[in-house]
Length: 259
Image (cartoon, rainbow, N blue to C red):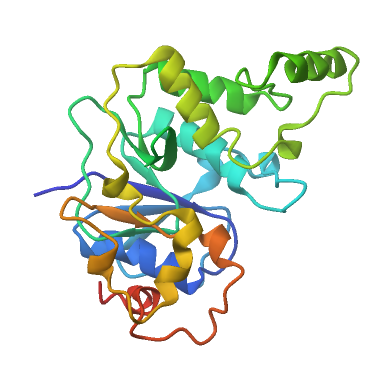
């Protein structure tokens, strides 16, 4: 059986061990995996195809979050532009696949990470959908003012914008073009879209990533019989020592692709 194509983005010349094992996990489950990059990748996993990211968004348009230096907000913009041009599933490089993932007949693939919050770390949207077009439009607005902000704050931001002092999107909080925008636009425009339950893609809460390092916890303690992927929340892992990971903990087994 042919499974949906998987797309990802990496900015840099070398994959870390988490990114490497996550991309490889999709290959192991029978997916074709295409990694978009702006430069040569030194350690590409066998079976992963490299693609020129400049064909989706020119290199000169890359930007970082001003406070953290993260490319996360840019990657939100990139994934929307990519899904407009090429049908498939976009995944972040910290998503580990444990079962093949396919796009439902509706064309919408995305999941809850909390009861009222939808994440886009695993994402597929119909190319001509209103939702995708809305997300592309806001991601192109470098002075985007989130419509879900309180009226008083929106007025303040609009006032600054009218006087040429608008906040650049890179100054806004993490997730503003990702989970926050996806959740808001689905509630406003597309209430009929089926969203995957939490345990399908996000069985591990981002505040519980320490469980990945505990050799006393197995993968069976985290997933359900329906789980397809696990988002590892790489940003949350930065506070942990990843130099000497116990090979018997969940993350240790993932890095060796034993899960």
